[in-house]
Length: 415
Image (cartoon, rainbow, N blue to C red; front, side):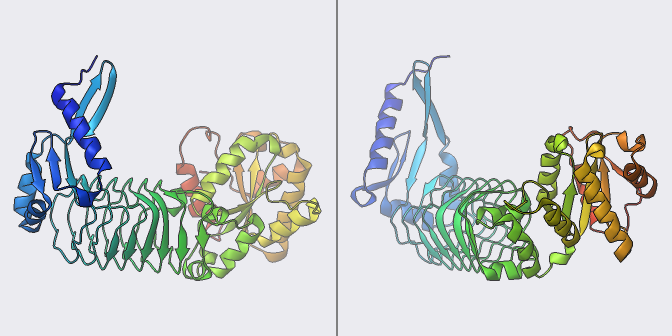
């Protein structure tokens, strides 16, 4: 279907271009819409400072939030109206309970402003200085905070879904129960409260200084990009630090287990040595990633094996130093001399220390039919977690497996 740009749309396109290119201090008008309505800076601020009902009624009349137009089959879009509040001193204003979506606050002084329970969806809040500002319970979906400095901001229960924090400084901010789902976060969290903050599927390239991550949600489902930074106080205060965050900070794999010893609650999440055959590496990679997403530390060769080290000595040491040896049973692993050595080492630790530490996972039926002595011993003495349908995108097995390996007692039944 072909779109033709009308004369009216062409004029509006030119108007939008001029507004975006003109410095704010050289523009008399701060509001424009497709219908030709205009408001000066004083008129717009007076309306904004009036009651929330008056502002929201004005905002509701701006029906065309997006205008589609084009030349031939080349389809484009423009904002149907522009509210330009750039480079203004709005400090200590009351903007609560207002629809402030699609408003450009770039470069403005927002110190002490009360935005509580307002809607700032798709707003540009770039380069602002906001101290002691309230964003509590605000909708800030897809908002942009490029180069902004937020100090002592109250943003509990705010929704920053798909928001962009690029070069932002977040100092002593209250982000309790705040949603950062699928947000792009390239920011510095310094002494901020992240209890209950949800980072599900967010993209993080950030610094964490003196922050407690223990009560944050879905940290393991976020994507971390180098270079992140984390300080000793954050590690010490947090119950556990996501492995991928530590990796993005440049921490070597063989140092991560020492980070666990520093964190105040490391004992609750066991570390696991994985014994497997290299022929099952497709399953192992997925298995390891899903365990990591659940906060479980893993070690396996050859990824974590130091260059030039004695393979047998290192593997024996790692089995002894990890809480749970997991042996992945398959037709291939039953024939592996390395897996046999690892299992026999783990069985020797069980006999010497007592208890039942080995957690076997079978991805086929081979262990139940084998004549190999150590495999028959495992089949007779252990309750084996059976995961033959691992190729399906179903992580319920992993969730249950993780819950059970955290227990000291043996897995009681097949999963």
